[in-house]
Length: 292
Image 1 (spheres, helix red, strand yellow):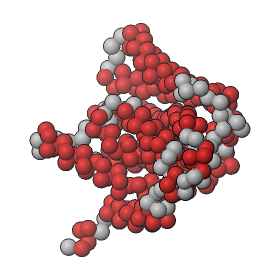
Image 2 (image 1 turned 45 degrees about the vertical axis):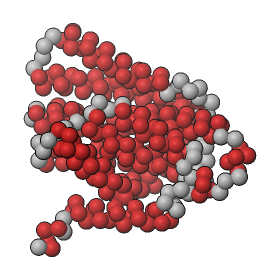
Image 3 (image 1 turned 90 degrees about the vertical axis):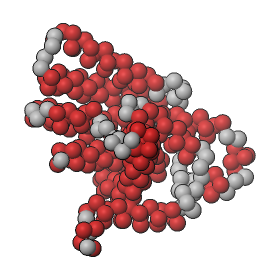
């Protein structure tokens, strides 16, 4: 009977619970986990993060519509391939826009933004441990969402797969599957982390830091200051990150993931760490879908 419970999934979950418990004890329940994280000095106006967001959402939508109009009605998998090709190109263009804006807005340019190539090896090895730590919380969010969904809509309720993952299941053509995997595990993590963590979270934290009187902040201990303003910026960015995805049922898990990614950025000061965590999470999700 015991062997039935000794699985890779259960061992990973148990390890994550232990790691998360240690983190809670060492950081006074998270209150002083980010107390000493330096602010990324920048001169961003509050509207700047919305520029690449507009380029991404509006530009890609228009490009997809234009491509479909010019090419007529291709086969279903070919249409999905073209859509993902446009998504990939749009992601590259948006990433280029973000890099240009970051170079102009951050003290230290791209290093100040969090793109220091000397940090890659450290962040690469830290990412799996961080994802493992938050894994039980992600599972809890998924289980809770499923439970509430079945209470409201009946026992047949299930969380729908992401639209991109459905393409992998629906269409067996290898070129489409490869392109979807590349978009999900390379372009999407890089773009979303640069946009949401690099720009939005930095902008929100800068605003919250400057709106908090220095005398009031200095009079509080690190433990009491721990959730403000850096945790507030992480929370707000996580909400923006989650709601930017269309699948409402995914929002609770995305909020948890967003908080993990925001923490990784603030703790390390490097964008490579949340990018690697995000890539690993997406890769694991794709692997699960492909193995079914």
